[in-house]
Image (cartoon, rainbow, N blue to C red; front, side, top):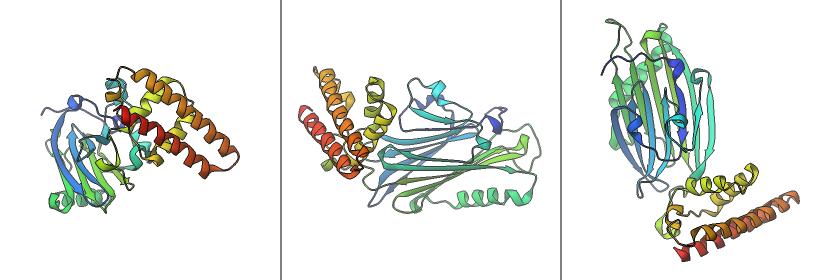
Length: 305
């Protein structure tokens, strides 16, 4: 690999729950680990891409992508058309990101800059390297590290990317990374915590068809039928109802457009009823009502499938 001059200030955090063509990422190291317990059954794939990293979590049974974190000098929203992605610039100054995502996933991200000229500041880097060297995948952890070409012939710290992933408990994945820029004498250290609520990964017997909830929400957004506030209500209700649909499959039906249009009308009615009851502070009944509406809609959808 040839030397590529990059800067810590160009790093961006990309988070998405949609799949995209990975060929735009130059992977130099790749590994994965399967984590299965009473709450989750997932495969976590880690890759080092240039002086950056990518972490993707898959449903181990269906292969669906549940979440991807890309920390790199790339803005995926500009590289991939129609990708639903959040991008955070000025990463050295973005101290913390906290998101409640689809599929009952909670995401926490924090980062800080390390001055490589101060030995006391680099202790955390030494500890991370030692942890990666001792990592064993059969113990629900994974470590990656890669050293890149450098202009400097002699340097205490070579350009390097470090990634360590560990399953903390039945529902939490812990991710530590470091991106070392020796030419700038700085490093960016990041820490991500991904928590899965129960039933994040659907069981076949509980769902007539398993797909990504993102696609349905994207379809709703593109319809221009709902306000942002209504979309939030719909997303929350879908999470509560625990139903998913396969729009790709529905689109193969001759009456798909009219059927989905009828579904929109039913959803809008439930949303209006929901908002009315919120105003009357009868929120639990409202939530139950909109959930029942979604269940009826999806039950009828299941019959068409």
